Image 1 (spheres, rainbow, N blue to C red):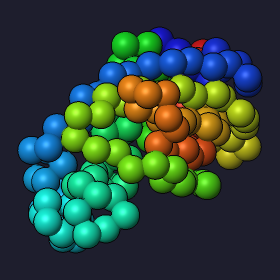
Image 2 (cartoon, rainbow, N blue to C red; image 1 turned 45 degrees about the vertical axis):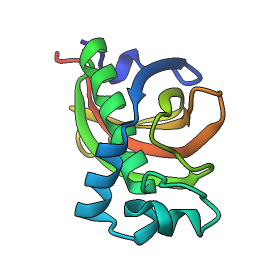
Image 3 (cartoon, one colour; image 1 turned 30 degrees about the vertical axis):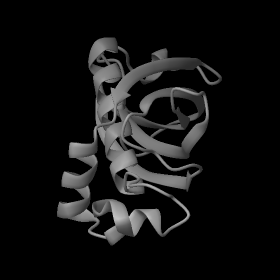
Length: 148
């Protein structure tokens, strides 16, 4: 199990692999972001996208899946998230893309009022199979301290 005390500011890691499918892109958009360019080939063709792109929110959800899978593999003692800063969708994500993540731990802070936890900030960048950055954000999360 990794705890607050194990976090090293400046530590970097690469993780994840997520193959984006057309079916999932359309299903997500239909449920949560039903803009025509996410749902219809003809509508998408009339935009700067040229074809159906994934919703930016879907890109965030796929990224969250990769993060959770990496946390489970690494045995982290996550206590949930506090927020996200500086989120930017840098390039569209399309069906057929394969995503991966790179992260850097940029800050950690012990809680002043809750000694059983601390918080940390991580800069995450998501890349497609061409190594184009498609999403970047800074997450703020809580993590348990090592039990006494």
